Length: 195
Image 1 (tube, helix red, strand yellow):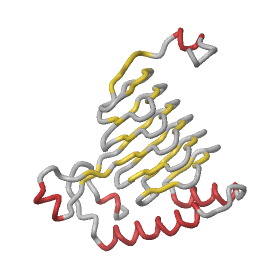
Image 2: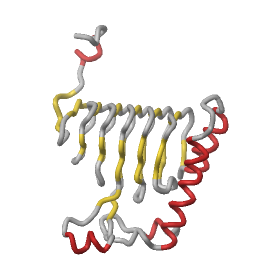
Image 3: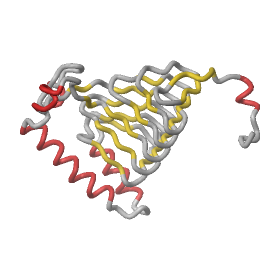
Image 4: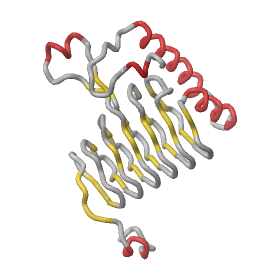
């Protein structure tokens, strides 16, 4: 069992613990190197992400800059793309399925803080996993909070704040993010997206 696996989802833990601080510092060092690689250094970029993440599929691209807490709790499938400024606070597990696309400035936050100020001021935190299933498109500026699952084939509109699970095959938008409608045959027939 790794030190991070000792964190029980939904239970308070102390993020200032020396072992956690060390792992975050190691990840920050790797991220510094990654974010400063030349964009044409594709093989080095892929190796850096593979060395940082818990697991990676094939054919992924994470635009620079990218930020995370630990990296080892991030697992991505095949054909994953993220635009610039992706932030993943991966205290708990974050799993991205196959064919996931994310716009710029997306935040996936597994970490949370107690609502009562006494425990919050002590520095206690909790974490809950985030799961994004296959074929999901997440628009720019979306925030996903701890404990959320986004179902396969769904689209999350730009600027949304996802605070609850989103089912499969829907368009969802807003703050808080709500299901607008199912994705259906009429969506497959659209050829001009300006309308």
